[in-house]
Image (tube, rainbow over all chains, first blue to last red; front, side, top):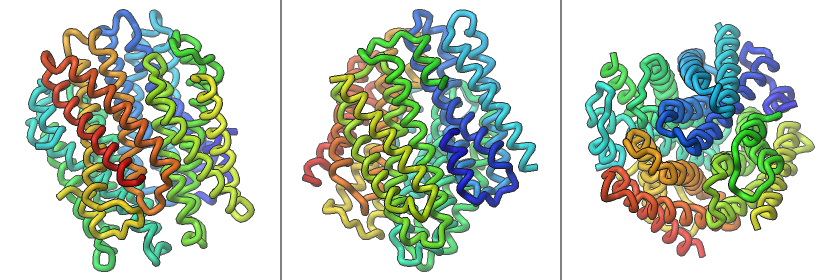
Amino acid sequence: MSYARQLLDVTPVSADVEAGLLAAAIDAFNDCTQACIADTDADLGEHDVAEMVTCIRLCLDCADICTATAGVTSRPSGWDPNVLRPLLEACVAICRSCGDECERHAAHHEHCRICAEACRRAEQACRDLLNAIR
Amino acid sequence: MSYARQLLDVTPVSADVEAGLLAAAIDAFNDCTQACIADTDADLGEHDVAEMVTCIRLCLDCADICTATAGVTSRPSGWDPNVLRPLLEACVAICRSCGDECERHAAHHEHCRICAEACRRAEQACRDLLNAIR
Amino acid sequence: MSYARQLLDVTPVSADVEAGLLAAAIDAFNDCTQACIADTDADLGEHDVAEMVTCIRLCLDCADICTATAGVTSRPSGWDPNVLRPLLEACVAICRSCGDECERHAAHHEHCRICAEACRRAEQACRDLLNAIR
Amino acid sequence: MSYARQLLDVTPVSADVEAGLLAAAIDAFNDCTQACIADTDADLGEHDVAEMVTCIRLCLDCADICTATAGVTSRPSGWDPNVLRPLLEACVAICRSCGDECERHAAHHEHCRICAEACRRAEQACRDLLNAIR
């Protein structure tokens, strides 16, 4: 069981979101951050690094936004839909773009295939949270 | 001249945003992050820390979102309005809430008055950027 | 299998560190960051928040240092022991202090008990990496 | 006057460090983070991006470590030399390496010249703080 889940299970959450769904989302954001950081470094080590520039930039943006989203969703007692909704929409958009770009390189670079998968899961986690807070 | 400005002046920016406006926004986001981190620590040192809990939580959210917004706007070549617009909207919303809450404590805590000012400037910087990318 | 591990398995690491050990360390740093962020928020929700100020400050420092350590260790191709060694030593020190403080509150606050465990694991991961790079 | 300085001026700092020196250091860390993030993006836009890989990796490490150092030094009430000393030593080492590498590209890339300057200032700020806490 992840630390996000363990901590949510012992903390009363005032937000109207089920603890399992929220913990899965936080885990997905943290996983995506890690995948994007590691994929950036792997891209930088490829012979065709010039072809990977768009992928690197999207990974850097994706890591930044997933980090912020993980932080804000980990403080659920003060949740404000006016903040959370656009943040999750930004996170959906960058995870989709970054996932699409990583997928383009998946056939040649296994690290991009793995990162694409992490982006898809984080994108879906954003959508699940958006549905839950509506 | 800030480093954000110096670097933008020597880097061709493909986005349709004037370098001075963009550099001022990045500076405002970084200033707001710093003010929120320092204000959190000052709040924790107050005798009435129990009264400052909402302020601390908003400062932590505000620092996270301003950090992400500074990062993404510092990589302007790949700007995607579908990402940037909701991110700036989330940043407007948290800077307003955090600024409002800090202002509530401004009469008693000078550090909150200063942090409120940093939040207001970051909020305005978001609005200026939103206007510029429309 | 964590994303850190999946990505290390498909990326040639030039550093003389076994992939399993490195992936476990990165996972421990990310887990500790998440636990410290969530524990901070749980501390802020406690009736005795004034008693939790030291714990909150240590959690904030610990999250910042674990985040940096996760980032640097996730870019292993360029590892420089002159950077990595003191960074891991700083991480050992903050994980120990934060773990000790969290343990002091473990009997009353289950979230602190969980966070202490995450700090202990991250501290041990630092020591294992320090041994491996010597 | 920077926000770091304004906030330190109204907050009693228990650490034995002069507020002006501490505020200058925090500003230098934040400036260096910003310069490294912007320099990374500028490097990625260069025709000789394959030559810039080492520079990009060092900038990413430098931004991560400067961010953590700014965070920890912005919470001075709880300063622990056992944490702060190795963290500043890691920061000295990465700022020196990153500054050296940026300087190698300074003749061809103005953005690297500017980033090198930010690294030098952050390195010096670390040394000044290390002297002050001894």
